Length: 256
Image 1 (cartoon, one colour):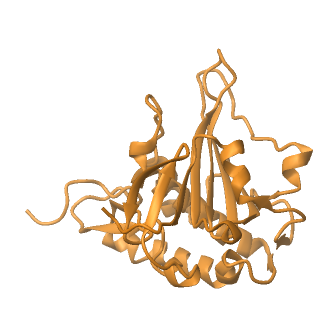
Image 2 (cartoon, helix red, strand yellow; image 1 turned 90 degrees about the horizontal axis):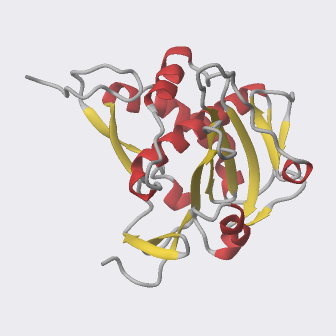
């Protein structure tokens, strides 16, 4: 028997060669000038040390990894390379917003899979339906929301931050799942609604304060979105806003 019996998380096919998808693309090391090992901290405490910024997911077939997902990575890199280093401004037209939002959803989903061991007990979220949609339709599901902002991360020596939470008003069931992640000076917020029997979809609304920091890039509502927005987050504020999140940052200690 040749090939994997595990279905690809993107196209759903079996029998192909499964490959390691790099949730954090390898080119980030050079772009962010990362030197030395990294420490992953969660809840303010170090969890583990790593030789490099690495989060691999062996759930994607070679055709998807080296095909449409690679093309998506290149489209994002072309548009946002300098932005994630905090240099200059970027104007995203509709095509650019779509490409960056697609990359953000794919990356958030892959990061969640690679760091599943950090999820709170009882947290459950199905990734394949969203990956299947992007594979089949070459765009994001219409019910997904993606926001883009800026963060002063490099000043505080942080490489990345990730936090994913259920959107719920007890005792009601969850309305959706939302996550914030940063890479360099870019911050994304992704929202996926959760449907309940007899209920429709719920959108994630941003208050006036949050709208100063985050601009919607999916669904597309503006012809051009400029980065950075009027205000950017201080990296140290992220743990206050998203207390269950974790950081990747350079570590003075070598990996264990």
